[in-house]
Every structure is written in C-alpha cells, then in structure tokens.
Amino acid sequence: MQPTKLASTTTEKIGGYRWTICALLFFATTVNYLDRQVLSLLQPMLAEKFGWSNTDYANIAAVFQFTYAISMLFAGRIIDKLGTKWGYALALIIWSLAAILHAYAEPLGRAVSPFFSAIGFAAIPVSVLGFMVARAFLGFGESGNFPAAIKATAEYFPKKERSLATGIFNSGSNVGAILAPITVPWIASHLGWEYTFFIIGAIGFLWLVFWFMYYEIPEKQKRLSVAEKEYISSDSEPVLEQDSTAAAEKVSWFKLLKFRQTWAFVFGKFMTDGVWWFFLFWLPAYLKAQYNLTGTEVMLPLSVLYSMTMIGSIGGGWFPMYFINKGYNPYEGRMRAMFVIALIPLLVLAAQPLGQYSFWFPVLLIGIGASAHQAWSANIFTTVSDMFPKKTVASVTGIGGMAGGIGGVLVTKVGGYLFDHYDKLGHIETGYTIMFSFCALAYLVAWFVMKSLVPKMKPVNI
Image 1 (cartoon, rainbow, N blue to C red):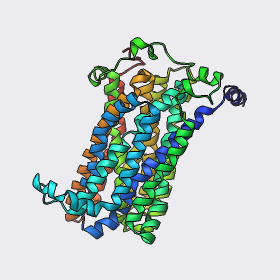
Image 2 (image 1 turned 180 degrees about the horizontal axis):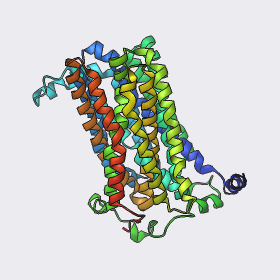
Image 3 (image 1 turned 30 degrees about the vertical axis):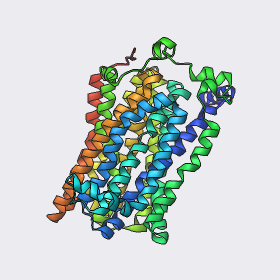
C-alpha cells in the first residue's frame, strides 16, 4: 500500500490540472464518436426507407473513411501550424456542422445530383449522394480530433503518463458508442431521423465554451503550478524537445517518411484501424442480418459491448506502466504490453460458431475484441510521442491516421461486397465469419511488422 500513498502525496504537491485537460479531450472524443455513429444505428431504418443495399451503405461509410484518411494528413499539419487550441476548435466546429448537415441529406442529394450526373455517376441514388457529401464533410472535420488530442497529451503529460492519459481520453469513443444506441433510436422513433442528426450534431458547440475557458498551452497556463510544469517535462529527452528557434522550422512529410518509426506507426494503424471501423459501422447491420434485432432492440447488446471497451481503453493505457515500473523504457514497455493485447482479439474467432446458441456470445466476444482494440489504440498513439519531437507529433499522427483510414475504407468495401455476395447465396453469416477472422488476426500481424521495423527504442533526431 505504501507506493499508492506516495503517489497520492506527490500528486497533491504537483497539482492535477493536467487531468482537467484530459477531461476536455475525453468529452471532445465522446462527441466525435457520437456524431459518427448516428448513421450506423439508423442504417436499418434508412436502408428500408431509401432501398439501400449493403454496397450502398458501404459506399456511404467508405466516403467518410476515405475523406477522414486523406484529411488526417492535412489535419496534423494544420494543427501543428495553428496550435492545439485553435486547431481543435476549428475541427470541432466543422464536424458538428457536418453532423447537422445529414438531416438535410435528401435536398443536398438533389442539389449535387446534376454535378455527379455530369461526371458519370448518374446511377447513384439521390439519397446515397446526399449522405456521401455529408459524410465527406464529417470525415474532414473529425480528422482533427486525434492529432489535436495526442498533441495536447504530449504538451501536458510526462511520457510515463501519456498512455494512461491517452487511454482515458480515448475511452470517450466508447462512451460515445454507448450513448449513441441509448439516444439515437429513441430520438429517431419520437422525432424522426432528421432531428436525430440535428440534435446530436449540435452538442459539440457546448464543448467549445469549456475548451476556450480552460485550455492554454502549459507555458501560458496560469492554472498550472510551477511544480506541475516541472513534472510534465520531468522525463523529456533533450533530443526530442528541440523547441529552440533553430529547430522550429517546418518538418516536411517526406522527411518524416524517411524514418522507420513513422512506418511502424503507419503500418500498425493501417492494419488495425479498419477493425474498429468495422465494429462501429457494421454491428447494428450484423445484429439485424443474423438475429433480426432492430431499433431499440439493439440498445442493450450494443451498450454492453461498448461498455466493455472502456475497460480496455483505460486498462490498456495503464498496462505499459507495469513494465515501465520494472525498468523498461517507455517504448519497450509499451511494445511488451501491445503484444499481450494483440493476442486477445483471437477470441473473436469463436464469435460465429458460438453465435448459433445466442447472440450474446458474439456480442460479448466482439466486445472483448473491441476492448483490446481500444487498449491497442491507447498505446500505438503514444509510441509517436515516445520517439518524435513535440512539434511533429500531430503531423506523424496525421500520417498514421491517413493510413488507418485507408485501411478502414478497404475493410468497409470488402465487407459490403462480401455481405451482398453471401446474402444472395443465402449464407450472409459466411461473410461475417471472414470479416471476423481478419479482425482477430490483424493485431498480431501489425505487432510483428512494427517490432521488426523498430526493434528497440530509438528517438528521432530531426
């Protein structure tokens, strides 16, 4: 019990304002995922209303992921240029307006239809066009969330606490995923699907008030004690903190791509982000296709599933500290933790075989896999701030985010094709079995490639 008391005393001395910043990041991430999940929960209703196929829905989801992927590259650069405070605020304003825009998808589709017809896409239904355009704007805005949040974490936390802080704010994605199935079906059934997008989308503007009240970079933050400022920079390595005027020049993407550390992060994101996208966008459709659960019937299973992922996000953020406290450097401790985490999704392989007995078996097993993803995500993000200077963290995060988004596009498009193909054959469960198999194995493949690219801790000297 003595170490716990010691940690508590230290925290009291240095203060805890950095955790207020972490709370702001948590709530922004909650809003981010709430906005992006509305469509997946309304998919059964909208598919029936507009006559969408699985491929139509996959195309709408893929537009979001593709735009998100490309925008991540520029979002990191923009946030590095504007700074965390204004970069984050701009991203949230854009994605909140885009979320509201979904409510006007039909007139939006009619407005852009002549343009798409002129360039050879006349066959796309008007409703699909409208949602594709709205999702594109949403992807552009939402791409700023993680580069900004990771940059803020690097600014406000010492390395030994960053994965825990990342795990906590990243658990906002789970809270958003929990709140969505509780609120979205109810709003849609009582007020209509248009009001669902409008109400959920408007929530983000409340967060802006608190962001401007409480956030400032540590150097200008009057609420930070001197002791806490010193603690935040206590384990910084001089080679990484090149904040002098001479080191403040712009670092190009091409220069960042010369480093193996960048490619390790890029491949890890490419292989695993699509798993989370798949769970997020396709689970309501899966429960309808195989178990005929729709509307408010999916509230309980999805709420249970995403509640489980909170354990993974926060626990995964804490896990590397076990190895770091044993003497491993932050990167080596993180990689050891990530290997254990990569083994957990193998349980998803049993989801379909056991699903014949009850839908609760796949729900719980997928919940474990999704929980492992959040634990993985908390750590893979933090490998960037372990090895790169703060001035490049958002840019590297953006490059990896782009790769993760492209991986997500491929997973979504392949999933849509497989589900339509096997649905026509009367065996849609085969399509889901194939996708779950990929989800189970992706993390081990990613870990071995990352480890081969960066076997040991090697800070990047720019």
